[in-house]
Image (cartoon, rainbow, N blue to C red; front, side):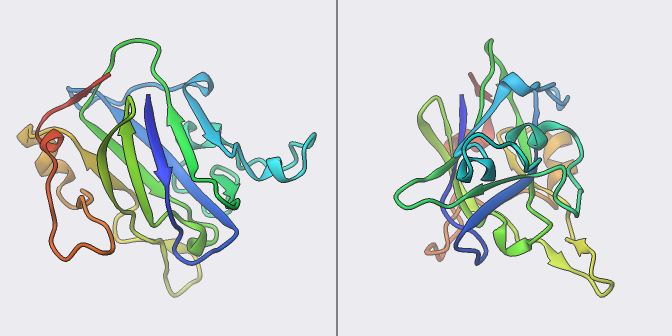
Length: 190
């Protein structure tokens, strides 16, 4: 079980969101994920009105492959509730090696995008850091220098060279130095 604990946004006090997640195996191939592989708590903004499912921004949109969406229809958004850490879970039904995870931050309202977050694998903290905020270009469309960020668990040269512009640093806003974790140089096995 991969658990993303979402600690803060880029300024929104009421909602938090992401556009997409992709997991890759030890060969750098994308791991296919289905709706039963993803969950979130709170599930989505639909939890604010029990019995309704009017809002399409649900966890399954994180793995639908439409990660560059700017209108929010292919993204996930959930309320920020008192004394609750927002979580996104990716669950594998068999042992799976993961060499990297690509994360697309929320684009429709960039202040709702994830800022500080942690990643736990089978309840062990393996990563903590800051996800880049999406920014606007001059024509009002959402744009970022790099459309996604990468958490890399491999030291395979082909992966590190290909992803070097997108790799997130393992740090928090209070860190003054960048640290590395031991699992950054190997695949994480579930």
